[in-house]
Image (cartoon, rainbow, N blue to C red; front, side, top):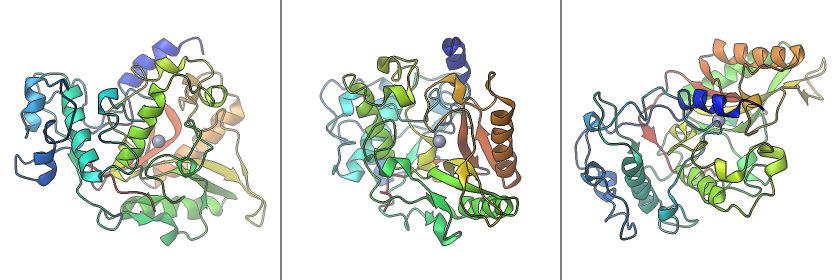
Length: 336
Ligand SMILES: [Zn+2]
């Protein structure tokens, strides 16, 4: 707890958001046409660095110093950073998803620093409107009784209410990630353990909802449970990123349960923190854990790594399947 600042520094180089999706072609995809701030319905005065307004951008115009591929986000909580100026015309509940996506794309570019020496890639927002179009599958199509507690579909989360875009408590992933997760579950069950899934694919609009919440400094209902050692105003700035890797469809958050000899009566292992605990203690290898907590985190990590998942070191519960099937694409289809 005494080294939050130092920990933030570490986060800046490892944030889960990494791999800002790329638009490889300077083509005429409708998302790209819409993404010009004027077409996206952004308010007059929207900050418009020259290159941010020059859609379409090529990857070579964007820096890796700010959003390198494979880099994790500044946020230990992999939530989106959405400028407040976009509120009301994009991420709003019920808003047109294409308009939201366009505004998001504009934001991503507007918030990127001006060109650096070496190339990076531009985000691409998928035009998919349904999970099927996005090639996202329900994990329960692989493991019908996998344990789920999809936090953002309910109120037991840091926002304290259901999050925009979660219409059902489901875990959606791209097929390779879902298949790999099924392998993890099978292996763990043979050892008397089971997974409990907290979040999987996350719509871009949900991440924008997190940011709206973060701007509401008066709402501190979840402080004790999720950010006891931080002022809420610090969550934006030091703990924000413009996108979440979850929106690419191959990342999930999960816990590990210990079950009885019949594989029933499962209980969560002591991992040292709960989900979305905004604190360095959530770092996977943080000092100060008990031997048991360290061993429990290691057991989860080893099981996941054997199936191809990689842990985000700032959050013991966060894993991304690699190689990601669509590392260059964000989705904004609702979970339903
Ligand atoms: Zn996560």
